[in-house]
Length: 177
Image (cartoon, rainbow, N blue to C red):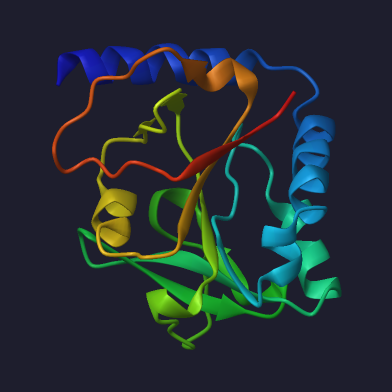
């Protein structure tokens, strides 16, 4: 476990030092918007970015314009995370860990989301992810059947990450250039 903590600290510092995060985030999501996956999607699960993460606000705004439904996560209790639909940024407020969470009570079933965009601190080429260490996404995604897509800057990629049997592997990565 110490190895994960050390890697987490290292990659948080790497991500913090990345320049042009806003422009690179926008470019990354422009790539996604042009795909069949996005264009065919009706309902998207998406994290609300925090600090130095790939900024998801551009994508969420575009999805609203494209008449797609958006669900974002909210921590419920100590170990559970659920997704709730939002129709506006006005439906967000600071919640657990200072993350913007939905005020909406419109709980969304996992199977309704065509894909979920997943944040992380680091990712490897085998689609493993290292999060912040609380296990919320691993717990939520363990029985999710649709696409699980990690979102990151290229600097967050490494050859191999340590992982445990409960760590959920992603289906693909969306990586900024």
